[in-house]
Image (cartoon, rainbow, N blue to C red; front, top):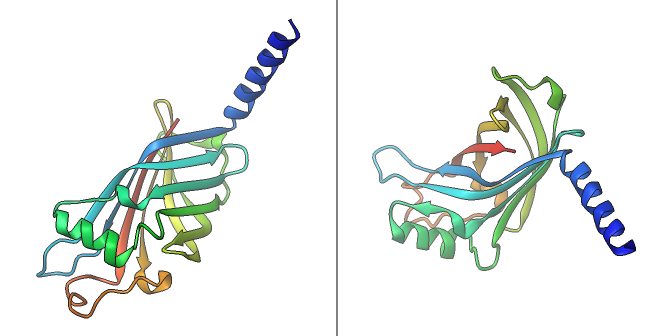
Length: 179
């Protein structure tokens, strides 16, 4: 009987803590490093994990780098082997805080928030500040953002052979539906 009481206690405690967080395991990140007049350099990862603490506004994301898919398989191979070195640096993470966040005030119309935190990619960390639109969805909230990352900030070398075909300024789009 003590076992069952203990198990039920843990169950209800975990439910209580779970209500303080919304998350997704299938968030989307798209990046583009295309240069006009050359082949599109664009990829999408649809298996990104994102967690937001609804009480504190803390946010964390985890992206497995090998999850990015390109239209051209050879680009994907070069991305993983030559640029990102995904065997050596298999993930990208972000940990930060949504400023002025109050989950109870999220509406269907949405509001723009500033998010500050630390992006870790390719073994390097950088403090970044982005804006995101957050709004209430049918079963939680959605977070959408668009920002730019510089490859030099993360020690990602673009070989001179393709330097005119790949931008060092990479446009990143986030699309998370958190429940």
